[in-house]
Length: 96
Image 1 (cartoon, one colour):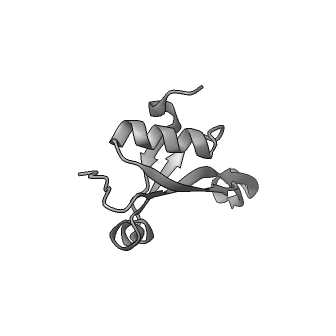
Image 2 (cartoon, one colour; image 1 turned 90 degrees about the vertical axis):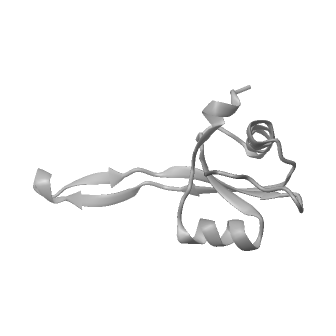
Image 3 (cartoon, one colour; image 1 turned 60 degrees about the vertical axis):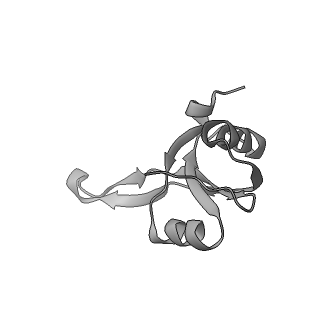
């Protein structure tokens, strides 16, 4: 089993993530590529002392782009795996 600090890489700070946190009690994290839903739920519960209701996992594949500095050779922009975690009613995560 992977440690909680290795599973949760960073909190995603975007307009959509802020809207989900404010309205639907959902928080968005970038997670390790080998982590699954149960491991993410355990890690969030352990680190933030909250009860996790549901976890959605999304995998963003790397995008191939032409690199102008290397004479048009294709390069790739990094992909990542993110998790949207829904918490039990009344729980919240203070990230500031």
